[in-house]
Image (cartoon, rainbow, N blue to C red; front, side, top):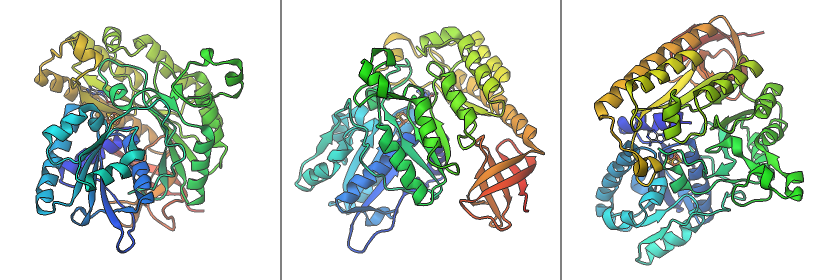
Length: 482
Ligand code: 5AD
Ligand code: SF4
């Protein structure tokens, strides 16, 4: 899930924020839209672009020619918020030289800080939370009338199901489809339930429709997005209910995640399906069996562990312990021996002892994750952990632990890649390699990036590629040409 976040961070560090852009007709109003955070946020930006397009705004990558700037923000860790603040200071300068410029803050940080943004960050004109994007054109109008404007209402129903996203900044081959919104899990460290509200699932018909439209316009891969896809349940709309609490009538037409996955896989055998994020507490064998049954459902699962110690998991309110997580891993490996697994790990959560940290390290060795996203714990206002526990691990110790887990993961990723040398994979070509224009890159089902000489292949093709070498990040191969 956080590959994009990583990319954004890297690019932001190089002073190159990720830009979202489309072609603009002459004379159209221009929207500069910048997106931080998870894939869900990028997917939301495509909805925002669509809503604004309906109202005459076209996205531009040229900040200086824009009429409206919108920053879609992330609140997951303190450093994500710092980046946004820094960017807003830059916009402040721009606004001084162009007073008609409208600056809006969208997304999770907007939801978290609400009116504080209008009060403290003086040059922000609009504040809009993740469930209020339909009101954006109206709010822009209010600002043009001389007011500040805000809508941070969260909803039990909003899924933007009827909005056809404007695909931004992508490669034309892979796209996101949002299948649900919000989160009801209440992990003690996490701000998402406060910024994205209650969990609700999107009508499967509209998901299928979106997949078919993508296929018809040349896309070859869709990633189904949700904070906790395993608890997807469509029974007619509205806030999440457990299956057992549905009426008999609702039960007879309900669609769970395994069924949704199967429906999307049936759209076309050449349309690849990925999804994220799974939750160890809710992941069923039914989902694993559907994955195993369809070649076009990618054999890759992102299953965040957060900590390898059961007491820490309890404090995190994750709803599973070490053994239960390992049981889920065993089920994945039994049902799909070739499935790659990645995870998220938090270092230095409240009260984490050296022994508890060692348990995370031993679990990593035991599971042999193919990839991991690793973070220092960052206390977030309003969360259960902030209210109940002390953020008592010194920053230096958090970082030391983080460095240890990063070092382990680097070895595990390299080992995992070495095991692939000599194997042949079906690769969906996503584009030309950045390093060498005579080489292409793409991913195999396991989500590993493979680079190979281009021969006669092009973006969007499937190529059978035999791997001859690797490093910890990439596989190198040659296409098998008949
Ligand atoms: N501090 C550090 N990492 C966090 N994550 C979520 N909240 C926090 C936090 N407060 C991480 C978790 C989650 C991923 C999306 O971000 O590992 O799985
Ligand atoms: Fe995504 Fe969470 Fe960041 Fe919101 S806070 S953008 S849901 S990662």
